[in-house]
Length: 385
Ligand SMILES: [Zn+2]
Ligand SMILES: [Zn+2]
Image (tube, rainbow, N blue to C red):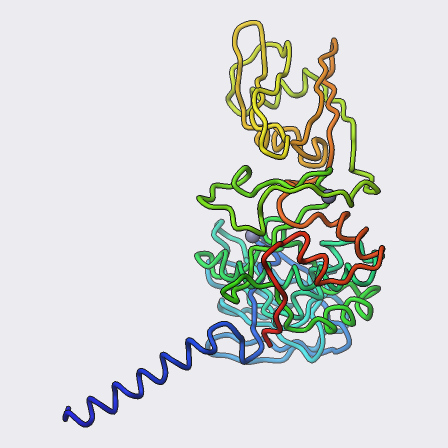
């Protein structure tokens, strides 16, 4: 290569690097996301919404199947499935002119079928635009009857959370699972679709960003019980970003979960502990050993005649059940003959934005940006596309 050619090549590369730096914080074309909707299933029932022809493509074939009533898709063997009475080699892509219904859930976009990790079963992945993904997240991550400003905020939060976590399940070939681990995604809710679309479309491309213009880790919880938790108390992070640190929240007092009481049978908890490999004969008591900066229980000792088992409070919460022990913000534990009594506050891990608090602020006339600045200090909202 001549000197001149080399020089030209260098100039071209420099321009590309410069341009990619300039545009790296924005998205020029609609972003597609892959969401795993069913895993390890041997069969699913498929029908169509607003159309009657299912387009089925494989690496080598393309066919159309008329569907008048729901049909079954079966896993046949390691690389073959059957749709109706026809066989197809995996991976298979399903498309139609409107929406595909799988096991009564309604999906936009296309659906790809792969062999699942567990033998003799399938994994279904829904490929949709980020905005379509939000149509299927919003009704399940927030109460759709809440204040409109709060619904707008939640759509911005869910978009931000998704962008910061893109490729979270990359090693398994998709971006997000459809459970609480990522965000709950159940496809289109026909009853609410008009309302939800209007909300999501009104915030199209809006993302909460940090000082470098990057999407923040927009954690949120149902209700904090009066104090937001510092992220480092819940997950292993070296430095908590300013927007995920401990602070007071005076806005969630109207939450039905602001304070709660729960009773748990001692014998039942003992069985759960034994099934997880802990050696314990009888629970004599429960004691909070340490607390986090927001006053949540950090470590809890389970006391028996013979020994003391010390558990992180979050682990005990997961053993008892996230919907029973609503948070680790436990103010009191009492031990009775057969039962344990817990009195606590808030629902969820308590990190980031408190949804009940934010909804209260929205209902009191606060705007999306005011609520973002309160719960995620040092951040702002930018239109990314
Ligand atoms: Zn996940
Ligand atoms: Zn709160």
